[in-house]
Structure formats: structure tokens, C-alpha cells
Length: 451
Ligand code: ASP
Image (cartoon, rainbow, N blue to C red; front, side):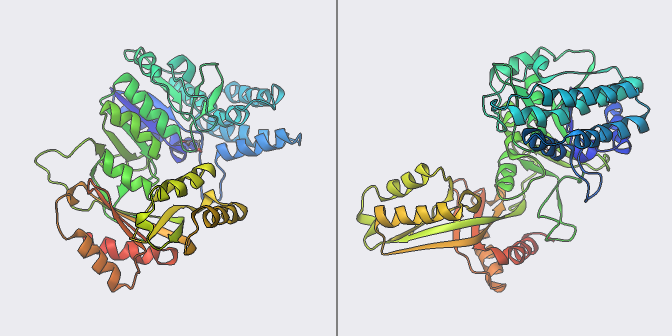
């Protein structure tokens, strides 16, 4: 059987939900349907999840909330009305929404999670009602009943292993189960959400739990492209890639599929296919453990990029003789709760590259002060606005010349390389460059290896 998940834009309107119904009906193996909250219907629209955050902020500040509640109820009401669903269903949503405010416990760490989860929870109820009305034997199921038990980490939950056996008990369920994505329950019974975009994670957990033959993730693009359409006009669609390639690509900015969502499917060896609700006949992108033996992988499957990095470079004469030097730098980062991404080094210098968003101006000043005092470098330099480009492909392993070709391509465009790093598994090559050259670099690499 198959687990199928529909993202926010696929469930944002009545018109989209008719496509969803057709897709579910089209294959009797589609038994578990995971849904997001209604997303944007057009670029200026607001996601229901963002409206819920606004509602949470207003409720917490004791501000007037009736207009916001009205707006949220209207999103569901409009969809329900156009689909001809019994209006009492959406009328009940207004009561559920008000209830989170009246039972608000300002001291609960899970308060925001309760608001956030409403978006998916109400949508799953509406969609199950729509399916039933159209003659599909479907029912809404709450994640608690299904067995999704998560860690005590508000807005950043992780699945607990004991969930999988619980979920497996639904394996032979006769009805199609409509499951709200994005949240589970802690052992104490609190609603706790995954990180933003986390309905993908729910889909993967359910697929692993029921041991599905495939996890189909429906979104609003044909699949995963070899480079972002923001930089490349009509980039090639990747038809097949491995979990590891997907992981490397999503590390460097490919956001079609939530990066935490791969793990449950990967562990359970369940292939994931990314497909388009608006173009379901397109094959999409298949993500699986390895390539079939008869299809040799491309050397490079994709070029990803991500901005917003910074680096701190420490120069000190005879650095290589100082035992414990790197540990002391990393200790400072650990004390300041900064996680780093790369650490290229020379004989007398080391740079640490990390995400800029982890630093406030005050934290930056403190970091530099501590490094200066505790490490006593000859020179200390902080650089902002660095982008990271990842060239990814299983086929790069033991294939000489990819770094040469790529650095030659970048040199032709006058892109200076601040760092090059290749993991020991040779599945990716990472370049750090100046942020303003990101687009140019992606284009030059893409046209070197594709097209
Ligand atoms: N609705 C949630 C969000 O906007 C989760 C999701 O759509 O996957 O982040």
C-alpha cells in the first residue's frame, strides 16, 4: 500500500481538493493520506499556519482576536462551501479555534504548538468529510490515535521509535485514513509540532510505520530540478536520486522536500517519490537507496546553493604545534550555542564557516572578544555574506576531473573560491564563494554539467 502526502498549495482551495480526490481515487493502494494546512492560493495570500501564528500572538497579548478567528474559519468555510460539504463542520471549527484561546495556559511550553497544529487538524477533518461525501470510505484520524509519539521539544519534535509499532497496527485498516501532518503528541499528551514544513515528516513516519511500498509526496512542482528555477530557466528534472544525494542537495538549499523527512523512509528503505498535484501524469522524482545496477548514475545530479553563511578565520604562527587549539575554538562556539558547517584549515590558519543567523551583533562581538582573549591569534578576520555551492552526485566517486572541470568553469566567470571541500565519500564537492556571485556560480556549474 502507499502513503500519500499533499502539501499546503495542494490543499489550499476547493479546486485543488478536487484534484486531490481524483489522485486518491486513481489508485486503490493510496490508503493513508497525510495533509498540510491550507497554503497560499496566490503569491499575496497567507498560509493558514501563518494566520494561526498571528492569532497566537494576539491571544498572548490579550488583543482582539475575533477578526483573525473569522479569517481562519473563512478559509475552511469557503473551501467547504464550494465542495458542498455540510456547513456545520466548518461552523464547529470556529468553536475549536476559540477553545485554544479560552483554555490558554501561558506557562505551557507547548502553547504555540497547540495553535500551529490546528491548521492541519481542521483541514484533515474537512478533507475526510469531503471524501466521504464523494463516496470514498475515508475517515479522519488524530495523530494520537494513530500512534505518533514525539519528543518533548516544542516546535522541533522528533519521532520516538516506539511510534512505529503503534502505527503498524493500522496497516490493515479498511478505511482510507486522512491524517493531519506536522504534529504528534508527547508521552504526557501535549501537542508538539515538528519544525516548519513538517507535514513531510509525518508522511515519512507513517510510510515507515505501516511499511508502505512507497511514500508519494505531492507538491506544486514536477519534482526535484537539477538547479533552482530561480537561477536557471527550465532546469532539468532529476528523475532518480539516492537518499544521500537528496540529503546533500537539501543541505545546500533544495527545499522541495523537508530535510528531516528523509530519515524515517531512509531507515525503513521506503522509496519516496515527489510528484505534482497539478500534473500527476509527470513521473516526478524518485528518491531511493541506490541506483539499479543497469542504470549508471550521472556524475553530477544537481547543483544546489545556499546563502547566509559567515566565516571566522584565525591566523597564528606555528599553529600546527599547538595541541588542543581547535578544541578550544570549538568550545567557545559550543558555549555560545553556535553550530558550524565547515572548517577548512591551512598550516597556520583555520576558518570556521557557520550560518550567519546564529549571530546577533552582540554575539558576534562576544565571539571575537573570546577568540582574541583565549586563542591569542596573530590575525583574526570575520567575513559575512558567504554562499555555499554544492555539486552533488554518487557518480563522482572515483571519477577524476570533476573538481578540475568545476573550478575551471568558475574561474572562467571570475568566481573566487574561498574554500573547497570534498567529503571522504566523494558524493559532493562544496565551494564557498562571495554571496553576490552565487547566481553566476550556479549558472556556470549547471551549464558545465547539464545541457
Ligand atoms: N503547515 C505547516 C507549515 O506551514 C506544516 C506544513 O505545511 O508542512 O509549516
